[in-house]
Image (tube, rainbow, N blue to C red; front, side):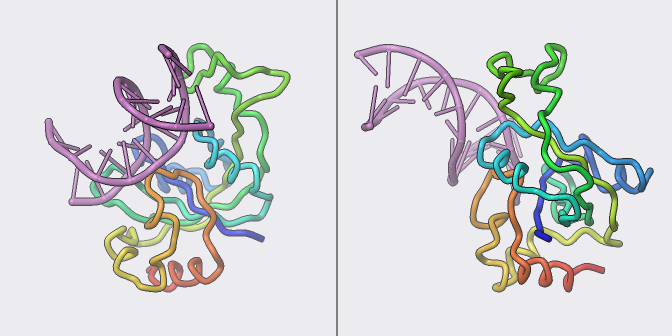
Length: 151
DNA sequence: GCCAACGTTGGC
DNA sequence: GCCAACGTTGGC
């Protein structure tokens, strides 16, 4: 079992969207960065995923989801009406992947990015050290640290 | 809205 | 293959 973090603008998809229908899988699609895509492809059913809210009033980690479907071709890349349409992607060899996530837990307060940055044990977390990466692995030690900061 | 970081594109 | 131009992400 592995640990991950994914970023989302809560206007697009927030922890509340997961919590509203906890049994319903949500497709994590629209990832259009190769490094992030490769991490998506490394996800396995049962892996745990921190849901991070970006570009909003309360930037930080909002809760946990788990992987219920491993990577499969992201349908949006072939949909001309989708903002994620990629005319250069070939159905024989799809360029982009998606996974399905289900709700696990909502923290009663978002763990602020500021607090994460202030924690020395998290200094080498990719969230802090690598900007603009929207899907990333989290080490077990980092995971435990984050969980210990949640309420 | 500003701007730093940084991935992608395309000319050469 | 290099690199400048450009576009996007995302914190503030």
